[in-house]
Amino acid sequence: MGNTAAMKPTRLLILAGGRSDEHEISIISARSVLEAATTVPNLDATGLVVTREGRWLSPQESQKALAEGSARHGGEPALHSAHVVTEYDVVFPLMHGPFGEDGTVQGMLELAGVPYVGCGVLASALCMDKTMTKEVLRANNIPQVRHFAFTRQAYANDPAHIINEAKRLRAPWFVKPANLGSSVGVSRATDDVQLKVAIEEALRYDRRALVEEEVLDVRELEVAILGNDAPKVSPVGEITHNGDFYDYPTKYTDGRSQRHIPTDAPHAVCEKIQELALRAYQILDCAGFARVDFFYAAETGQIFLNELNTIPGFTPFSMYPKLWESGGISYGELIQQLIDLALERHQSRR
Ligand SMILES: Nc1ncnc2c1ncn2[C@@H]1O[C@H](COP(=O)(O)OP(=O)(O)O)[C@@H](O)[C@H]1O
Ligand SMILES: [Mg+2]
Image 1: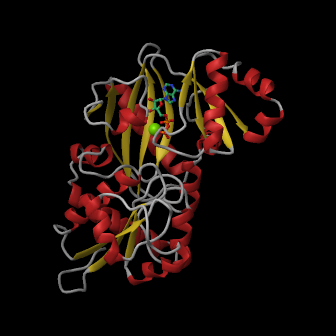
Image 2: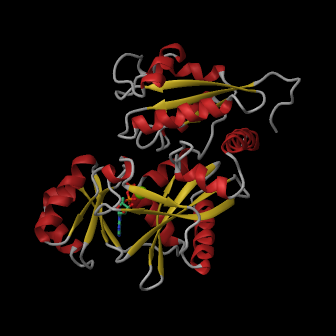
């Protein structure tokens, strides 16, 4: 696919920012894609910034926001401005979390009939929701951490019951909102008091939450997938950090976490992870790309799939592009392949 030199350039619209706590990360990613796009033949890329309130700036106003690194005010309600997407050949929704990664923007792009990079509505929504991801993966025997999920309503009705159910899992625990990301609302608990606090914290962010058993002596391994019906898998990378866990400040403060690409985890573990990641990607009907994150318990040798990120961080220093660089695909080439995959998927569904 892709245009030849004689043809009109492909017009790419990158959607950046948005309502999530990863607003700024998204803008940094978008800036790097815009810069790299200038090296991709026949590609004409434009950035559009969505403010923290979810309002859409015009492409002109977005230039300032892109330069400043964030946008809080201004813009129009999304549904007033969204028709702008029809002026482009392909859209890259490079926004993380709810209203970016969860199928909502993808649904709007479906309605508009515009090809877009990455997963469709179903896979986006499923992968954003930690409990639903687990349900589908469990039905397909993909190994994952033991967990217990519940609603805010169920907790309000009978908190002691929810806490007792959660305590059937071995301590320490991780408590998380079902739909978020970037570790917001995630906490670790070692006793009843902390468990209660952690549950109430998670339920502030979502109507549903889950408690998981902590993986002891955990190593965090991640792998990148690229493709539609015949996806490819990258080498396996590892994140190490000096925080209590890989929480929000640890993720986004320079020097607090390190990437190791490839990891020095045993070869057999990496092969297993690559196989599980590809299976999960296909089971969840992912398309375009995703980063699949695993927990590896070095002591016992157990591997657990933790989550699929359908809009992974995309700065040149982010894990996803770095994994592909080590797999032999440059940042510019990756952008070209994502666009080709978006066009291919759009064609195949017509
Ligand atoms: N069951 C677990 N065992 C050990 N560490 C965990 C567990 N669940 C989460 N963590 C730690 O918390 C971090 C954030 O959890 P994660 O499920 O990845 O949420 P998010 O979607 O916000 O990234 C992980 O990267 C890891 O450091
Ligand atoms: Mg995570």
